[in-house]
Image 1 (cartoon, one colour):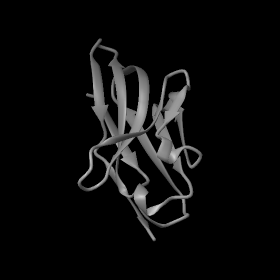
Image 2 (cartoon, one colour; image 1 turned 135 degrees about the horizontal axis):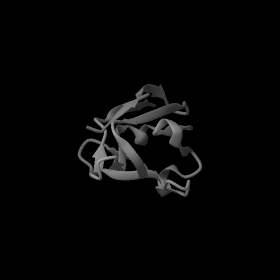
Image 3 (tube, helix red, strand yellow; image 1 turned 120 degrees about the vertical axis):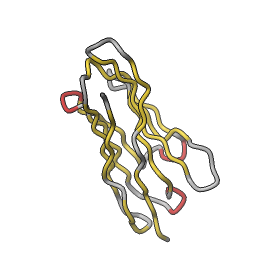
Length: 120
């Protein structure tokens, strides 16, 4: 069984920073792309940032220059460093990863979500 476990959300004032982590565990052979998505109340889930296994990244226009995605392949972990946070960044943040297992199965897996709240 494979799973993603997120951590690092919380309450922060506008202009502050948070770092989200998402660790994959289980019988993992390889993890392809990993990403962070968010969903605010009443809105659709949207891509925040994505990183390939080779380290190529892409970001939503709304977070470019403020957020940085990175990954540690040895730890099967992806991070999201969020700086200069704004109230409009408030949302539940979800980790996503495409995982290949040792037994040959593949999963497009989601984490449980972590709440990020930015106060003005």
